[in-house]
Amino acid sequence: MRKRTEPVALEHERCAASGSSSSGSAAAALDADCRLKQNLRLAGKAPAEPRCAADAGMKRALGRRKGLWFRLRKILLCVLGLYVAIPFLIKLCPGIQAKLIFLNFVRVPYFIDLKKPQDQGLNHTCNYYLQPEEDVTIGVWHTVPAVWWKDAQGKDQMWYEDVLATSHPIILYLHGNAGTRGGDHRVELYKVLSSLGYHVVTFDYRGWGDSVGTPSERGMTYDALHVFDWIKARSGDNPVYIWGHSLGTGVATNLVRRLCERETPPDALILESPFTNIREEAKSHPFSVIYRYFPGFDWFFLDPITSSGIKFANDENVKHISCSLLILHAEDDPVVPFQLGRKLYNIAAPSRSFRDFKVQFIPFHSDLGYRHKYIYKSPELPRILREFLGKSEPGRQH
Image (cartoon, rainbow, N blue to C red; front, side, top):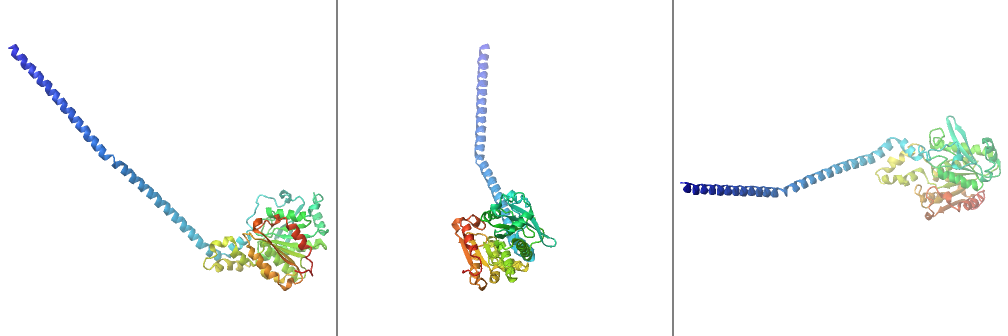
């Protein structure tokens, strides 16, 4: 019995072993199959994820582009609206155009004390104030010839007034728009003229610098007339010349025409970078480029100037001036075009009022780079002034 049962038991054990072995193999095969399917599923999903990310990125980029274009379009519409609105604003408020012509609110350099011209290197200059009209006060600088530099140290206003009667000629300088009598290029011109032996008297029109009052063409001209009379009352027989620059040429011709009408003309008139009249200058100014071809340009921009009482008609004034005239103009002037200075000369030269006086036009080549306000740098300027002012008396030929 024992022998028969042992083989049976052994057989059961072998079956169990083989059974367990076969079941283990089956489980392992099943696990392997499951991992393979999972890997295949993962492998099948892998390409889909980058595509989704790329689509999302493209959507964000398109969104940013749309937002940028929307903002850009909004800015362009605002600029266009402003461009169209400005002409109407100027037409409705002509005072804006007057402020743009005078630019008296632009004070450059700003941080200077106009009571102390010595801070600008003018140690032989005195500052004082005159009152052309009630409620109007103008600041004046008087620079004596450089040869009196030492004598002028510590002197008061009375001394400066007294020396106007000495044998040195006097130049009344009328500056252009913006800035003050202490502007850098203006100070440099005073120094040049002083070194040549001239007294230089200059001032800020009402509303400029530390001068009190409201700017206007009439007011500026009256201020210049008041200073001229103040000089003549102290200068004795010394020659008095009037020098106008840019917008100051309009003041200068207004002044000289009035002086000639009352038969007290200056000894000569010098115009640096002059224009013909304010309308032509405004039309030629670089600021007008963006509107020059705007429909109704004259009506929107030029008529408000006239309605504000601003003309500065140099071309008309020179027909009534009877004293020697010198015009200086740089070919590369970007503010007052050279052709306007030439045109003014062509109007003045044949005028009957100049038949007994010298009329001269001096151009400065564009290669020199003098532009609008640096003619004072010309090494030829002393010779030009010496030759012209030496022949500025009546009876000389053109």
